[in-house]
Image (cartoon, rainbow, N blue to C red; front, top):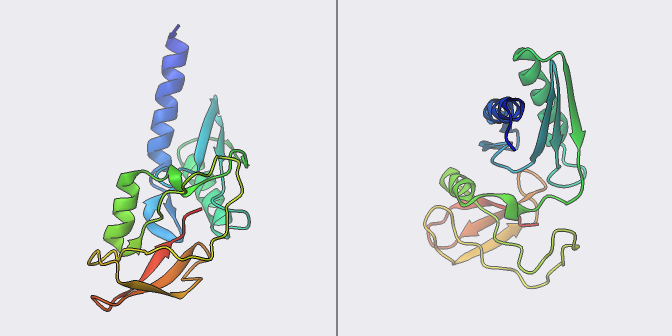
Amino acid sequence: MVTDSSRKTAAARESLLDLLSSIKDPELPVVNIVELGIVRDIVVDGASVQVDVTPTYSGCPAMQVIEQDIVQALEADGFTNVKVRYVFSPPWTTDWLSERTKTKLREFGIAPPMSVEGAGANDLVTLRRMRKTIPCPYCGSANTEEKSEFGSTACKAIHYCNSCHQPFDYFKDF
């Protein structure tokens, strides 16, 4: 049963999701934290709000900046008691990125992650010896090669396109 109270709560949650959509991932400035899929829940109680987030991986240095940005944005919106709670289960996966978000990454020059095939939400990621072909985000060519396991951040690798001769970041899938 939908009550007036639940409608107001749902409206407040949607309004806060819009507000949180203004916060960019500091390592992926083309993607906001809602698009990244790390915002798991929002609980509003008067002037208090709790935002549950799932880090993309343990030790991600961007999480401290993201937490500060969430607190600042919500305090600027009038909340006096803002809490950010980390939720680790289920673990975040690149499968939570929408196709629209992957398109934004590609248009920004970052090859988006591919689907994590066959992995369940709580499965460990299998390390593979065989490298996948990563299509170039600029020309779409599959004639690419990995130049470095780590790119500008730990969650990205550096690749090179042998067709258009452009280096590019690849957002690793996990």
